[in-house]
Amino acid sequence: MMFSLPRQLPNQLTAGVIPALSFGLGALMAHGLAPFNWIWAAPVSLIVIADLFLRATTTKQAALYGWLFGFGYFANGLQWILEPFQVDAQAHAWMAPFALLFLAAGLALFWGAAFALSHRLANGHWRILALIGWWGLAEFARAYLLTGFPWAGLAQLHMGTDYRFALLPFIGPHGVATLLLGATLPCVLFWRSSARALHVERAIPMLAPVCLAGAVGFALLQQEIRPDQLEMTDKTVRLVQPNAPQDQKWDPDLRWTFVQRQVDYSAQTPRPDLIVWPETAVPQWLNYAEDTLRMISSGARGVPIMLGIQREASGLYHNSAILLDRDGAVMQTYDKAHLVPFGEYVPFGDVMAKLGIHGLASQDGAGYAAGPSLQVIDTPVGKMLPLICYEAVFPQDIYQVTERPEMLTQITNDAWFGVKAGPQQHLVQAQMRAAEQGLPMIRVANTGISAMIDPYGRLRETIPLGEAGYIDAQLPAPLSVTLYSKTGDWPIFALVVLLVVAAGFSKALQQRHSRLIFP
Image 1 (cartoon, rainbow, N blue to C red):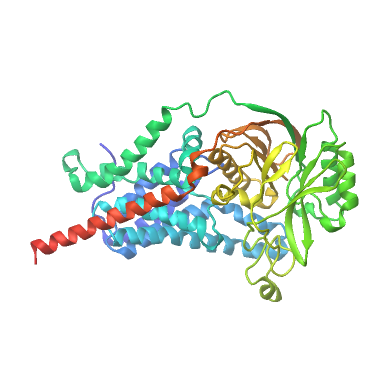
Image 2: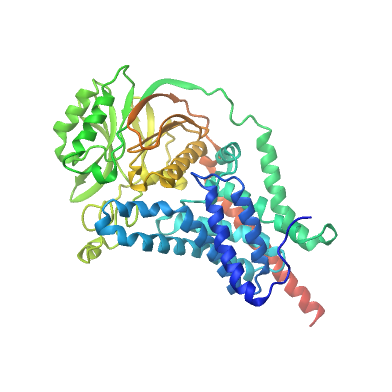
């Protein structure tokens, strides 16, 4: 016999236990994210919260349960957001708890709205179908609105690595999230019903998404999606990880020690085809770094180097990646296009600066200026799409690039994220971008985790978190163009809208039927 909560709970118990349980379930589901990767956390949490959702007697109750579930999830899954405030603890540590609470509470509003609309605009067990659709739309809104923040998206939950990364080239992260909801939320209808009670009203919203998930999963499993043999290029890339803690990275007494460490790693033999250093690897403005860059290239003994550095142009500051030729001259420059709000810039920054409010990594007033867009550059190992840190979080930015590269490259400074969940969650998202596009990813992080990621999203060579070192990694060849890179998020967006419309249409039909019987 399957366990179920009692159908009727005392009002006093309902008022206290169910909200607390909603928060706890969200916190539990966060353990499906890296580094915990509890594979059972998401399905258990989603099925139970669906049961609580169906118990809600008012839209206000449903909204509260959804918001508390989201608050518990984001407050636990995004605890790494506390770490940047500890770099200069005397100045910023007091902000840390407020940043986490406000961020978690704000993101949870998307989920609370999805629960409220699902309850309001659908009836009975059709509310489960509505919840799949509205929750999917809430995740789209979270990923796109106000520059977007898709970190801790449902597709990032551990579901068995083979299944998650195998689905991404076809339906992308929102598709994986929708299938997760479609495969779990309807299970509550089995939980709450005996076999004899499964009539049409319950069967349709229950079976439609389950059949969809089963059909897609069956089709994919019939294909040899991720063969053991992988085609490799004849190019070798050296990944250099200096392991400079953020509180030491800009220290005048230490910063050139980390530069020299990278130069020493770059000088080692045998010679690769390209050397990659992390974000802001050189603690100097590009405008005044000619001698430094010449010294770096001399140490690399003629091998081109890609590295991160800051630069100023026309009074604007940029977080940039540059490619140096064998003589230390700048061959290519890319300015980061998708900046971190309240990190690299503050909205109305010049005004905020007068109030003493600056982005944690910004330079002056409004902080960094954004580059025009992502752009493909030519390198000695092929056409490359460079991504700086946070830019690897946004799949929509990558698939909108018109020219297909042969590889992705992420340079990042994950020292901001501490040594626990943040860097590992960031790595998972880099793996997802590689799988979505069918492209290898060269990932170089200041404190780790640096990795060569193959076009199936698998880690081939890595430098562990918190270690200094380098690896020479052979560059995998790209796969053929993926379906997701062609279609983007539009098919899944259309699907979740269709689910919402179908659930709402069912309510309209029920209301019309009621008026015909009781005019």
